[in-house]
Every structure is written in structure tokens, then in C-alpha cells.
Image (cartoon, rainbow, N blue to C red):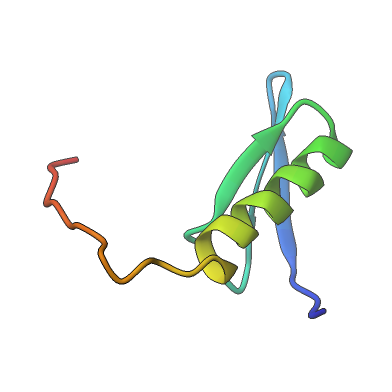
Length: 62
């Protein structure tokens, strides 16, 4: 297990946050505790889960 830095702030009724070491991973929660759980889940999905060999790619406009 490794420690990361959670950067967070409150807007209206949600806490928003991202990881300093991985700023592309962002989420929100109604409480700080929920934000922490959501950022852990987002980290698992973005960093630790493997992409299967038969993945697809598509370019999108944002």
C-alpha cells in the first residue's frame, strides 16, 4: 500500500477532490469520507485494473 495526497475542496453540497500524484483522477462525495472512498475506487479503476488485450479505441471531441 502506498500513500497519496488528496487535494480537496467544498463546492455547494459536494466535496471535490483529486490526487496530487495523479491529477487526472478526480471524483466527488457528499461527505469527506465519501470522497475518500470514491477516490480510492477511481484509483483502482484508473491505475490498478488491467486493460484486456482485445481493447478498442475511439477518438472523441470534447
